[in-house]
Image (cartoon, rainbow, N blue to C red; front, side, top):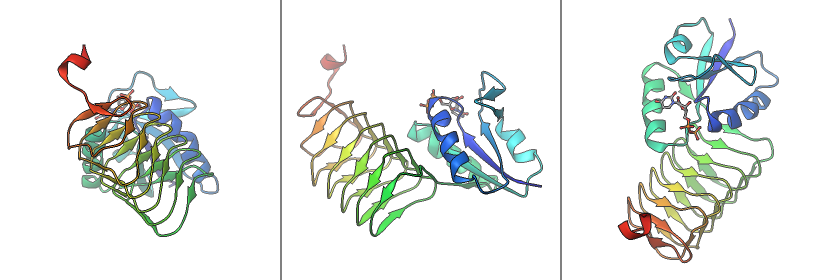
Amino acid sequence: MKPLYGVYGASGCGRGIMPLLRQQLATTDAQLVFIDDAPTTDVANGHSIWTFDRFVSEPASQRLAALAVANAGVREVLDHRCRTAGIDVIGVFAANVIIMDDVEIGPGALLSPFVTLTSNIRIGRCFHGNLYSYVEHDCVIGDYVTFAPGVRCNGNVTIGSHAYIGSGAIIRQGISIGAGATVGMGAVVTKDVPPGVTVVGNPARIMDKEMKC
Ligand code: UDP
């Protein structure tokens, strides 16, 4: 029997992670499949798409999963589902990721190509660092935080769990972003962001109802 690895989520995020996992496991004799609860096809990019039930029931010497769904709430649910079924979540790091000194990353982080984490950084469970994002020195990042591509997170920034940072956002040094907050694409964050709010623009401001329409 072979070890079985699943990329949970067969959509955009998952299809960006599968080649990285394949590369990470290149020297091992592992079977790699997608896991998806609502698959639209049986195969994606040469890998079978299985339901979670099939993933837990097929013969395997070991079962591990990379949680490749951008939505933080879904990721947390899938994390609990996997752990309850005795499946460990695994981290997937692109080969060219740069990680400097004293960086602690929780289980299940997915780091895409060209991500840089400098020194003395703490990151919680199931972080997503998408293409070209960086995290500078002394940042503290909670659980299930998602960075879209190209996030520039400068030093001493604190980010609460479940926050979503949009593509190309810039976060000023020393800023605190509350749990569950959303930072819009391209926002320039110069002030602390309270938990749960959405900020957009340059300088970033809390989005109100009028801005939404
Ligand atoms: N998905 C799943 N279980 C869940 C929630 C989502 O398998 O509980 C799958 C869903 O069917 C879809 C993928 O995860 O294939 C999420 O894809 P989406 O395009 O919403 O976003 P992505 O995270 O890939 O950017």
